[in-house]
Image (tube, rainbow, N blue to C red):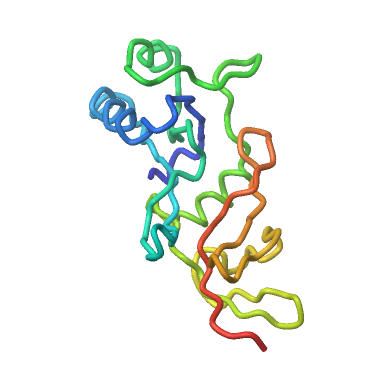
Length: 174
């Protein structure tokens, strides 16, 4: 991800096709535009048929983040890419994701794409994060399900508040 150009945009794609569309975008814009594409994902532990399995799930199903500047040339280059439905727009053209929204997302993905589990302990109905991507973002935690090892986290994305499940390992209860 480019730290030089801090403009971020959201691309609306077919749900479940995020990674395939990202690869197509990377091929198309490989050398010319300076655009980079990110599909934020999270590592979750899920129980299936009585066994716990690690799964990687998309944080924002149906969306890809684009970092760079989308000028008219790039905007029209998005047309015809299979699985890409549209660029989110506002009255002034492509909708730029506000800095405060993208800063939280960038902190969670830590320069990669996959949000790893955080470690925490619970103290008198309060969750204290000890390490991991949620460290310093405790105020965004809506609730914790110790049995499933998940924290519901409030994130704003594309101007809408969303609750997203992230993995959390409860170390101890004090």
